[in-house]
Structure formats: C-alpha cells, structure tokens
Amino acid sequence: MNPNSLNLKILIGITYLVIIATGLYFLFSFVDIKDLTSYEFIRANKNIILEYKKENFLFLTFIFFIFSIVWVLLLGFASPLLLFSGFVFGKWWGILIILISTTIGASILYLLAGYFFKDIVEKKLAIKFVRLKEIITKNEMFYFMVYRFIGGAGTPYAIQNILPVLFNMKLKNYILATLIGCMPSMFITVAIGSGVESVIDKNEDPSFISVISSPEIYLPIFGFFIILILGYFIKKKYFEI
Image (cartoon, rainbow, N blue to C red; front, side, top):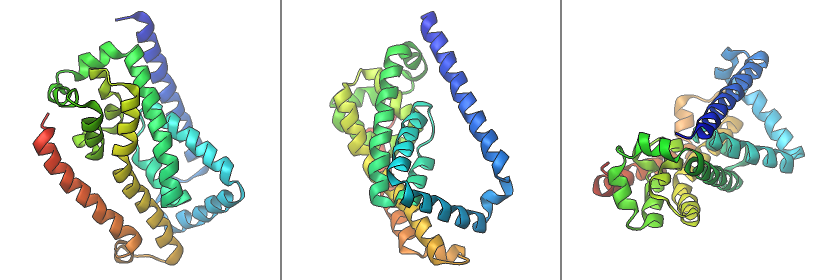
C-alpha cells in the first residue's frame, strides 16, 4: 500500500472524528438532550429556523449546500440531510438543493476513492460485489442508475458512492446515474420532512394518528413502500449479490 495513501486515509479519518466530536460538543453544550424529544422544543426552534430562512434565504441555502457536500465526503448518512432539507426548504426547493449537492459530494468522493484508496476498495469490496460488477459493466450508466433507484439493494449510501471504483466507471455516467437514480427515493424522503413541518404547523398537540393520517405524510410513505416493492423485485431479478 502506498504510504501517502495510508497517511491521507488516517488524516481524513481523524478529521471526520474531530468534526463529529466538535459538532456534538457544541450541540449538547447549548441543547439539553431531553429537549430533542420535546414537541414544544421542536416547534419553537422550527419557527426560529424558518424565520431565519425568510430573512437569509440565499445564505442559508448556500451554507446547507456546502455542508451537504462535505457531509457526503465524510461518509455521512443521507437521511438526516433529506429530512432537514424538506423540513426547512419544502419539498421542491429542498429536493433541488439536496439532489445537486449530494451528487456533487458523491462524485468528489468517488474521484478521491479511486485516486487514493482504489487498492483498499478493491480489497474490501471486490469479492462481495462480484455479481454487481458483472451486471453494471454491461451498461454502466443504466444499471448503476437502477442500482441507485432501489437504494443500492440495501447497501449503505456511503458504500454506494465508492462502489464504481471497482469497475472504473466514467465520471459523466456516474454523475448522471446518481442524479437520476437517486431522485425518486430522495424526493420521497424530502417530502416526508416537508410534511412533518406542515403537520407541526397545523397541530398544537399532534398525536401519532393525526400525523400519520396527514396527506403530507402518508402519501410520501406510500410512495416509499412502492419503491421498496419495486426494489425488491428488481433486486431479485438483477442484483442478487
């Protein structure tokens, strides 16, 4: 293994841990952990966030856009970003921001993984994804787009982002497949986040029934289950890996 690549890996890992630790420290320095499950706390801070968005829309959009790129580079989960994007920006503007930013982040991560960590990726993942490699090399853009559409057949988002290193996927195909393939499932999750904001805004003391029976919530969830069902059959047919 190249010593420079190993040193870079260690540096990125340490940077990631420092950022997470620093973020948690500042979060819990100002927020009581009990408040995170309090409806009144969420409602009060929701108003603060949305009011700030009205007054500083472009700035907040820019900050969240950059944060999303960095989050993906640091192997973060996509779900928190999607829900927050929908909650704050609404489903239409939210999906536009998050889809473009996460695609950029994933593409940069793919390039970095291919340049610095190709040997590590192949050593750790090649055996597990032999079947996937055989499928995607037939038509890399189409099959990787389908793979993204079904949520990576259960593969974690961060792993999905670096898997194409195994078959030297063209960057252009990677970007298009990611942009198009991730759009349906991401839109549903963003819509759920937007629906939560709408439900909180309408109900003084919402119950589980009132939340789940809201069209802003149950329609995206219904769409999510449709994608799960489609994903199951597509995985059985093409992606048994």
